[in-house]
Length: 551
Image (cartoon, rainbow, N blue to C red; front, side, top):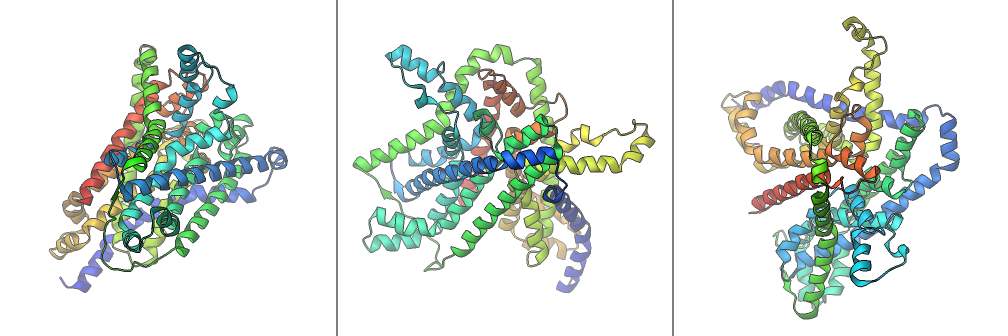
């Protein structure tokens, strides 16, 4: 078969795959468009009250939360990335992995844990009073505030900045740093004059992910009483029963998200540089000794302890107190619900992710590939509370359009069939986390290339058969990585599940939130530990895959 004939055959075979990919992209776009159109909808009295008395507070609280968390995560994440990438000290390899573990603990679980630990009757103050006879002003332990929320978000979101910056320093900046060392520049000069300027794009990328996670959060802000946009959406929806005003709040929040995304892209675009050599080298680490070594060790131990070991240890202690009360038939049903909704969502999501990635790799030079990638990635940057409103509006509209069909099938007039089922939640999960599965599969395709599939096509195999016989066995590791990462995200997702789950359908995340809301923090430890365990397994698997690919 000639090259021209192969291209014509490939174009014909792609049609079905392209149709499915475009359908998925349009479905991912619909909720966002519906939300943005809410800015131009007719206002009511509730919105006028919100706009006059509350909207500015929501905006300022959200802005301060994002700025405070962003600044602190940059300080912690970049410092740790520089230590691990540029220096050698005892336990460095352990810390390099341990700094990723905080991603296994959702911030809302950390907020419940630290809030109880630092309370007057919590383990810390009780130990200080009974063991040492010390009493303190409660203001020193007041974590239920904006400062406390920034503290929690910093400890459990800094790995985003750490991972991206560490990868950049180890792979991209080695030549610049080595040249500065040869010129006799000290570590402080290199860090502030070379590392920080070169890493601005990487730092901005990590900080933008942190900002998206902060704006997506509901558990921390609600538990700490912070009036963010997400908590405002919940209160407007469930407190005022005003979906229209909730949609307008979601539209304002989405506009803020788009602004952050634009700023991050501008920073990345303007901060490009060219390497002085085509040879890719890794950064050589300098051995720390004496006081600097002990200072680095202490800093790393404090961060790892606060962000992982202390909260996990406290949850484990609480679990020993309450496991007989919590571990029952209802908890088994809770696990069944979580696993079933996750399996269904992951199966459909990965099917769509593989389809889109397979189409894009054959259209990599076209505008179509760029547009599809942007549309597929859009859902992950939209907060769960915002996306849930868009999904609800789209599904309710679909229900109304299917009204005649429902009547023909015998349902009561006006019955919302799809909106009252798990379909809406699965649909939202697919839109929200499609980017996670797609990125994993796309990385797998980029590693294997097209040469094997093109050889199979030359031998007369159809595109679908080529995919199952050639491509899928080659990318099965990437697909499994996508499955693990998506599973972790779905299990710990809170705002989306709270808003869209059917009545009396509980998952591990919603049950932990329910216990915490009822001031049963100790009982929340069991479902929380299950969520953390899923996260730890996912982090271990992700790290193992990364190590294998690096070899």
